[in-house]
Image (cartoon, rainbow, N blue to C red; front, side):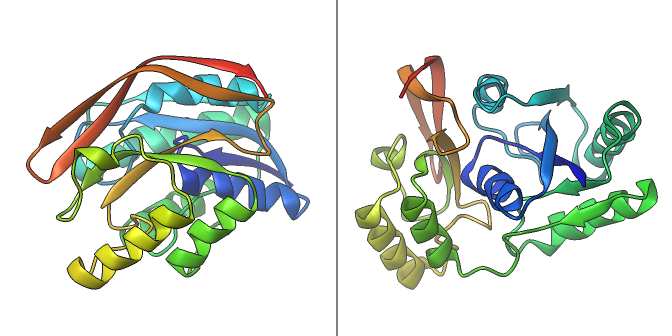
Length: 226
């Protein structure tokens, strides 16, 4: 079965591709959507880097930009998937949804309308277990955004390792947040994993913090040999 993965370059969408390929599915192409700053549906930080990551994965990527908000931002997604189905003959889509019914229900609706199957390989996974699995499977992940109490500038660019997981557990206990960021508390970027032929080296980045929100803006990067 040929599938298209909704791809942000973050840990969930990348790990979802990894899981589906390990199950024997063909992930034929990727779809990235650059939405508005406060998008309800789409990952925002450093989304342009998905083009470099897709090349490292040897996968065709469709990159769509939209300035639509809330419900209207689903229209470009539907149109893009309709085009991809026609061009690539895909039969299904992959999402990195873990627990967000808001996202999963809307994507499922689009899939149903287009006659595509929808796969959510991470759905229902314990969020701490997910972070641990990423480390076990040699995923290098950094935090590129936050939107919650408990975080500060030092978290931007931080690598998710066992120490970081323990810190996230403490924040979960104190602030009742989602430790893997399913509620938008953190955004991530995968800089290396078994899917990549080359890994991403960050050369320049800016840390921007405004109240409870922070953004790690990567202004220069390159893919280097492992």
